[in-house]
Length: 135
Ligand code: NI
Image (cartoon, rainbow, N blue to C red; front, side):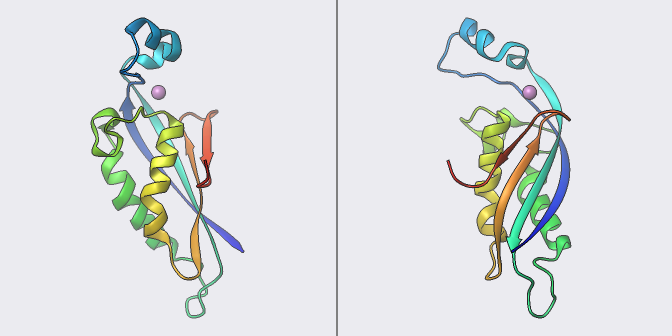
């Protein structure tokens, strides 16, 4: 198996809030993140597969770039995540974002020789989450 990765960047704002809880409880759980603020996110999309017999690529990374751009970046870059269709009713923690991005991309990147392997999402230089499709 060969693993290929495309890294992309986007900037989004969000507010972490559980609408089922009181303002006090939200402040206790989320602290500063209960306020409107932004992040410079980095996403790494890794596919696992075998080289195609004609191209000898697992997947042309230009194609993976295009898919990530259309399915993710166009919908979240410079947006307030809480008000996007993608995160309607979902608290946009890095964990939830990685799962949603997996769900959006899994079918789009799947070919006979390749499938989605992991989504890594960096919220800061020091904090990132990784999701591999099982919960
Ligand atoms: Ni945040």
